[in-house]
Length: 91
Image (cartoon, rainbow, N blue to C red):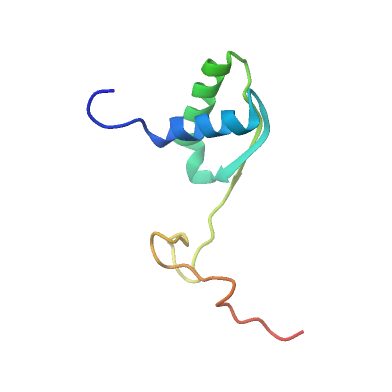
C-alpha cells in the first residue's frame, strides 16, 4: 500500500458487498456523498463483481439546516438538536 491506508470508499464497498452481494436495489445517503463517495463505491463494486450496474437506484437526501443559519446541522459541527431535547406541544 505504501504510506497511508485505503480510503473509506473501499471500506463501504466491501461492507455492502459482504451484506448485499453483487447487486443492491436502493442505496441512500446525503447529497454530499453522491460524488465522490458513491461514484467510487459504484466503480469499485462494478469492477469487483464484474457487472454493468451494481446499484439500481441511489436516493440522495438534502441536509437539515439550523433555523436562521446557512450551515447544515451535524454532530461534527455540534449544532444539532436531538429529538429528545425538542419541546413538542401537548396533543
